[in-house]
Image (cartoon, rainbow, N blue to C red; front, side, top):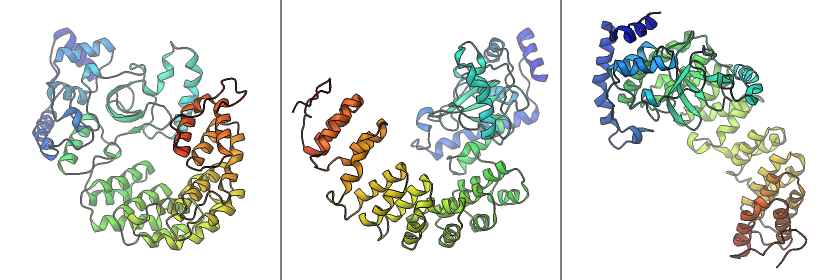
Length: 461
């Protein structure tokens, strides 16, 4: 109501927005911190800095902001409006920086209430997509972008991820990280308004904290975060607290002990995985023991351990002791864990062609491809020991990607049975023409591949 009154007074009587004492103090604090961040990164190494180069545009005028609001029929949240009016109209910020007001983007109906809950789940994503998908046939229906209703895109992280400002509904004024593909949950930042978030970004920057994951982090020093975790009940916030501790340039011993305690006592596997990763990166002495404990637990914890074995050098873990146990459970693993297990075995003395061969007949097609790749990379690989025969049946597959994989797997192996199969595959899938040329060049040293009869009646050699 107060913001709408401000808009009315601005448009009718041209009365400028008045700051409270607290707002004025925060604006001055932010302005005083701006020069310090450029000094921390003179070579623009921070992600996005080479784009905005620590240059702040002039603030927007009251008339410019009011005209934008009138055009779009909404009132900008007060703290964001203060930033535009008294600090800068866009400029440096997290990732690629802030858009100017005129360059912000509106994907949905900005006047509708935002449908995004504070702690969005995958079920919420699926429910919104269930409403949205039938509307694709009607290009005039704005509900096809309902994920973005009531929000304004004010910056981007690249790819499909943007940062939006919510301008309507219960969470008006807060920021959220969005997925432009509408496949993953949108994530609200912790701070209650734009100015608090922006000032925290400045403070973190000046303190030398990692900017990776800043958007999902929460405020506080290490002691405060550990104490907060002990009383927090909301799982999403507990995850953010554990992650936020990794952003500090110097870790306290109590933080390492905190992560270790989580690994040993928590039932939440997401928390355990995050804590284990942080301990691994920190090269904590407890990592080998925790890895053994997880590996002996036939659950998601074992999958986490197998995944982390890929980073054994970083974690100071001797993977040799895991080779035989991994071979024992290999047929039981899902595709992801299977791939991680094979990559670990390749680092051990068990990495040889004969070790992998017995598994070929008892795993699915995806796992089989992983095994064949490992066999070809094994130190005792010999193309004459049956490898080609294992792959030849794949040329009969109806799926293009399976046939493509077969050609790639046999590159650099000179076997007279293969060229006719590659040629016939290209007749079936004309998209393979470049792959076929590369095959002949890499395997047979031919700068020009034999010509194909377009009708596929015969091969011209």
